[in-house]
Length: 262
Ligand SMILES: Nc1ncnc2c1ncn2[C@@H]1O[C@H](COP(=O)(O)OP(=O)(O)OP(=O)(O)O)[C@@H](O)[C@H]1O
Image 1: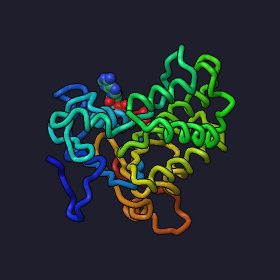
Image 2: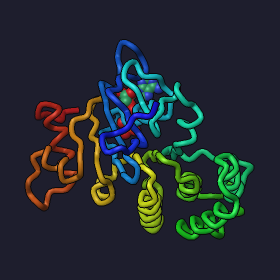
Image 3: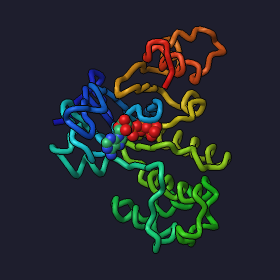
Image 4: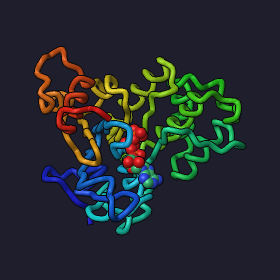
């Protein structure tokens, strides 16, 4: 069964009232709902320990909810495991690559695993190599790459697939300024082609510029959500000069009852 919204669009991601975590007695997430529609970038923000990675683990089907559910492209993992899994690509914060495969072989492996058309995959690989200035590194093994270059390989693999839902955990750390710009352009491109992107990051100015909607998590609860402008309004930041950083701080202070003691 595919869940449809009123306008007939099936959300790429629909997490509904999800409660879950690492122990039954003390759930990390409390009734969290997150929707990402095709062509939409949703920014997931929150302090360290707010529950962002835990939410992502639930979306990836690595953890089972205590209540609520996650649908990807309209199906739960139980309903259609293949569709659920093939509709998602995930880029973790820490790159994990096969030590004996070159950059190009990683991309070829991904293209094969996702059954991508060979010719368009080759063209896309070349484009991505240019975007991330990795053309000269295509034949390199991961052991010879810098941290940022490894991260680029992970991103290139996910962007090669451009599935309905792209989940990216803190992509900006370790990338040089040109790579950040290249990544944002590449994300904009896949978004425009209809993929939904869930991007978890502490780099709020990038999300403020790029995300269509934001979800602010605090202690496993959603304390604000909507467009960057709406989130600022919810935080009471009415000054046009206010940034998302200002709004985030105000929201967290309010959620902590005015005290950010730690
Ligand atoms: N494997 C685990 N077992 C038990 N508790 C965990 C585990 N991983 C995380 N937690 C707890 O779950 C809560 C949420 O952690 P989570 O990693 O989801 O936060 P986060 O928002 O991703 O933080 P960060 O910004 O630091 O990555 C924290 O209280 C954390 O201690």
